[in-house]
Length: 638
Ligand SMILES: O=P(O)(O)OC[C@H]1O[C@](O)(COP(=O)(O)O)[C@@H](O)[C@@H]1O
Ligand SMILES: [Mn+2]
Image (cartoon, rainbow, N blue to C red; front, side, top):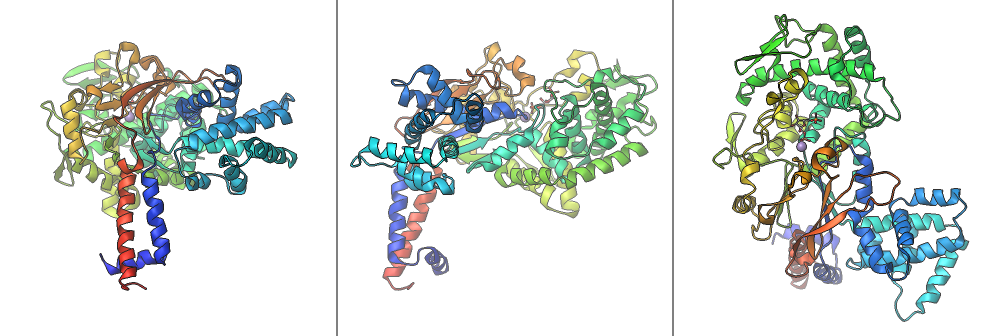
């Protein structure tokens, strides 16, 4: 091995003893059971439901409570303990408010929490648990969690707990303990895309994700749309705002990201003063807490940005004939004098015929007011410190796909044609498909944000294609029919058809060959996707292709719950099995939010860290350290 590398390693392990003891430590870690991985997708801004899933480890914490305390504590008290673990600050404030925060309650709660914590941390090393404990609590918690049998346990507990209460730190201590339980339960968190849009506060979801210790994100089409907007793509800026207007999500824009919508409000109110904009009424599923906007004004803003978006999209399509999206440039096919549009040779009447900002001679040109407005919006996106911070986090933790422990994770699809062949996409004149396509797109997505000049411009435009292009792995449908749904009554034009991947991937052998394409063991692995709502109520199942494909978009999004019939899935992969938690619609402040958990696959034997990618990495390091030991012994390194 390269002596230079060994010298670097020797800085970290400067003696034979330190290298040897690390080898022993790492070997011990490899023999522990694998940590529990959680997979979430399509959160779509539904922060309350998502936070609940995180805090409750999608029902697993309740299962552990029942396991440990089922025989000694009543069902009602176990329910309350669960609520305390999920929302400790809130629960303590509630009890204090109604005079129930007694020493007796504190003593019992600490004792029960310790028992739960012992169980959830049993499979991890002591040092790993210590790392997750807030600094000033490390000593007490470490002691309480590791009392040996030689000590009179009950007496010891009583003494420590008594001291915790008498010194007045019980509340803080309980909060730390609850958070430790939450954090230990989720070893790794995989997000399979679509954090943004439709629901009220994607920014709160991101704040939470940024606190997690081990999280990765596979970008969804809605994430790409926000990333492109943050990078300055005007069509995507318009898109992000349009969707927010459609769902009345002012809070995420204004309170969350501090984006300035005043210019849009003023422009819309003036331009569409005498237009009731009834087609554009926001779909008010959630109220805005911080920025309630009058729905009539919201509708005008929605129309203003929709028109701008259609123009900007038309411009992009004209600039990139290689995308073959000319038929999606609908404004150029519109007869503004007659109020009709021609699609596939047929003329349709428009539901809205009033477009005061469109010059029929040049329908894709922004009016002066629109151009000014876009400048303001663009500056606002570029200058939102919080938005840019969140987007950089999504870049740092994100990718087009991920392979982990033999599973292949991506949001949408691997584009295929009707014969089941991989479809190729042209990027800077070269064709890419399958894994190389996803790798190339990963590069491009990074260039859109981090490059400059021509390289950035090309990549920046491409972000829009990734949002809605027919061969985009993140989108995977033949068109995005938002124009048709908005402006044309004929429902046959509203259909969006899925890429052939969605048919072929129902077959186990197709999934297996895709897993192999990505270098994975196809016998052991699975493909895990989001993006397509699984319509349980129509008899669909999230488990497809004989268990090789798992589609976990169950509709956390309120907007989609009537379509799916449930309220989201979490896939949970622990050392024994792969399980799906099926969530009911979340009602804040109510118990009964515990999901149904069902087994997808039982492992042949309990999986240890040595069976995982992490285990491989550790083995690599052990081998390096062994070489370092040899080098010490041979006197090559002093
Ligand atoms: O129901 P909405 O919010 O109008 O969105 C519909 C649009 O969203 C999409 O389904 C894309 O969003 P998803 O990635 O969440 O599926 C488009 O295909 C469709 O045009
Ligand atoms: Mn999606």
